[in-house]
Image 1 (cartoon, rainbow, N blue to C red):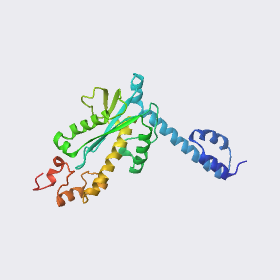
Image 2 (image 1 turned 180 degrees about the horizontal axis):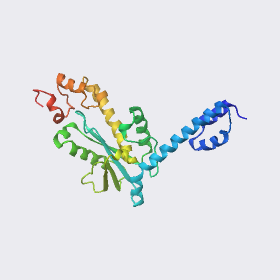
Image 3 (image 1 turned 30 degrees about the vertical axis):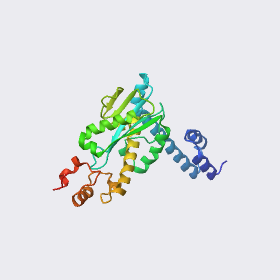
Image 4 (image 1 turned 90 degrees about the vertical axis):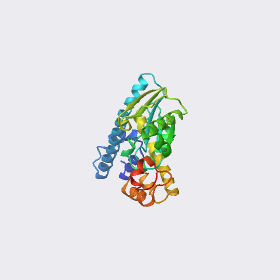
Length: 258
């Protein structure tokens, strides 16, 4: 009979696929230490199974596209429509059919650390990915909706593999000449849109952290350009900096000519 430490090593080093077999082998063992190990293994496997089922549901729209004969399905999302400063950033991602990357979800539901982890995994496992960036000047010139659509078009055009279907969070993209579908809250309903939301968020957050070094005093590393009270107070005190969206912050700048 294996010792409890030996069973612990078996459980902790096991691949997730081997957990059911290990549970079957040791679940009749009445030693308290083994019972705890098997309970822990069951929770681990249940969590894995739940995540796999969640991810399969996230593939609903992608599966529809593949069943209809579309081979390369891209997901597109944006980040940065609301901030007072910095660009709007979009990402387009084509995942391998059936590749269930654990943890993909609406980026807003993930911690910054988890987004960073998933960023690397997504770009390493994706068939193709690309970013679209539209500056604060163009946002002021075009308006944020049109700037967002332009950034999405840039991201799709930048993919090294041309998609034959595009799934987009909420919007549709004019003039891309590709079949497309806008999905309300798509980052929580589509695995490829969710992947795009994560890498776009990380990409823009890194940009704003760099801007914080160039334009200190607005705490861009923390607020990422969003209109927090501290950010508004800094604008009122210091005026605007070169990356502020003038159309967004005009009411906070008093007599300044912006």
